[in-house]
Amino acid sequence: MTEVAVRLEDVRHVFPGEPPVEAVAEASLEVERGAFVSLLGPSGCGKSTLLRVLAGLIEPTAGTATIDGESTVGQPGLAAFMPQRDLLLPWRRVEANAVLGAEIAGVPAAEARRQATALYERFGLEGFERSWPGQLSGGMRQRLALLRTFLMPRDTLLLDEPFGALDAMTRREMQEWLEGVWARDGRTVLLVTHDVDEALLLSDVVYVMSPRPGRITARIEVGLDRPLKTGDVTTAEFVELKAAVLEALGSE
Ligand SMILES: Nc1ncnc2c1ncn2[C@@H]1O[C@H](COP(=O)(O)OP(=O)(O)OP(=O)(O)O)[C@@H](O)[C@H]1O
Ligand SMILES: [Mg+2]
Image (cartoon, rainbow, N blue to C red; front, side, top):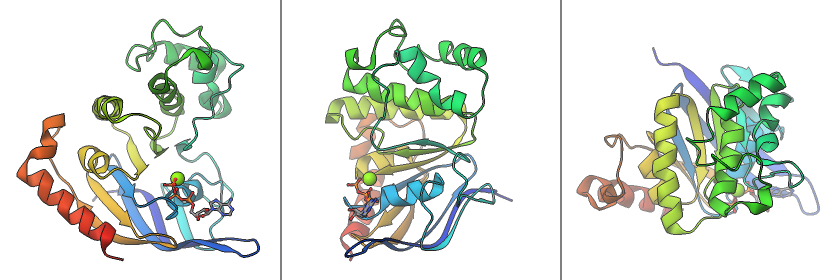
């Protein structure tokens, strides 16, 4: 039997205000343990809202959200969360930013530092441990934010557009790199993106959302052979999957 790590059931979310904003009309999804799943949809359809519900930062207006069967309502920190903005602290060096999430999650400082040291090379940050975030390139900042998320002792990672600020070439390199890191790590990932190729290249399953107020309009099993290479975006199989996703995106 497969285990479900992440579950949203009939989630609706309305932000109160004048007027209130209905961000998500209805969303249900599941992520199996160890799977890489993407949530894809146009800007403003409620992707970040759903991730923040799963991160325990927003209580949904209706429906339930669970991580490993536990409700996330009022319980932040059941999963490691990388917010859409990298939120690096400019006054802390790279090494101090890296361990921040782990420390908040209760990992002793020395142990967090030891784990970070083992990962700088893999994350392309070796030699920059004593630098300040302001001295890093955009790609390095995002790898640091990812490193901080990876160092949180949680089985599930929630990543909100981790490559959002990058140009297409850097993005593609980072996608291949993330796939490698994830394959060695084996944790469950739910990734939010509005990039169709990114979702297909990285995922086992892609959920597609409609424009705001968001609904899940399709669940597409990807199942491409791994590891993927950049050239895979031209194969017949990939092109067919992409057509299905684009149709789902345009269907409402
Ligand atoms: N704190 C808030 N208060 C009021 N409205 C909000 C709040 N946060 C988000 N919204 C609104 O909810 C809707 C969904 O926002 P959300 O950030 O979830 O979209 P998204 O799919 O992540 O978009 P993007 O791809 O641009 O990041 C938007 O219309 C947004 O303006
Ligand atoms: Mg967003």
